[in-house]
View 1 (spheres, rainbow, N blue to C red):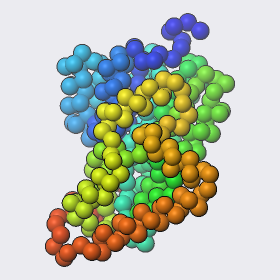
View 2: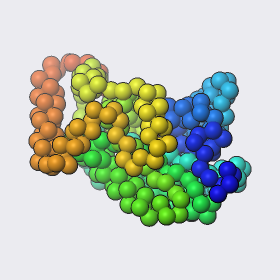
View 3: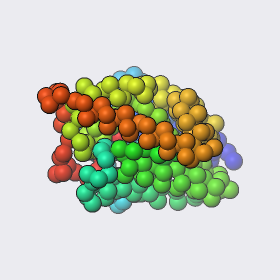
Length: 307
């Protein structure tokens, strides 16, 4: 193939990043731009995405911002098609938008299940459905889906989120096998704990089902040694460039993944211990332990979000 008809890593590549206004999506967009890629930051929070794109351009990079609700298949397809038509190629699509529903499954309503499925799974499906045919025709491309370590291990207190992330891992690894003969790559990102807006309460459009004071949330999060998004993005792009299939970052979480693969009962045991520790911490809170997240018990929130 000629240079014009092969995947670029990453200079002069064209990349779409959903959920590109904040967190992992923003960090990926910035890291891609630093490497010379032409980046489209797609997000429901379009004003924030525009600010990120403007900062990238101030630093000499190339980025644009587009409003996108990933639960809207027509809008997703339109964005991908317009990007391809404008740029003449499509190297990368990072299906990264996601939300969390945080709390015990006994507190879920049916709408909570639908909300997390719509964004975390259907959002990825819409991105794949829009980009994959283009990549097949041009003979190259790389689809990168953001799952989670919760897509590889049991994850109590985020059961719906965990279900969607397991599905994204299965989608990605299966499509990878189908796509490889056509020259199209597929990878799945499985972050451990990354310091993002979705980390504590599910993100701007997520939902916290149990009113846990933010101070305690921070304590529980810090125990898991959260990684900065920028550092995560740097490591992720290096792994994507090597065409890794399942990308677990930080690397020390690979031990937990390995143990769960060796014996799923170990993974469930560790999950049970984590659940017991968290529930004990919540049960011993004083009555006025502090403010809860603004996302707690907000059933009227829109059933979609960007990571």
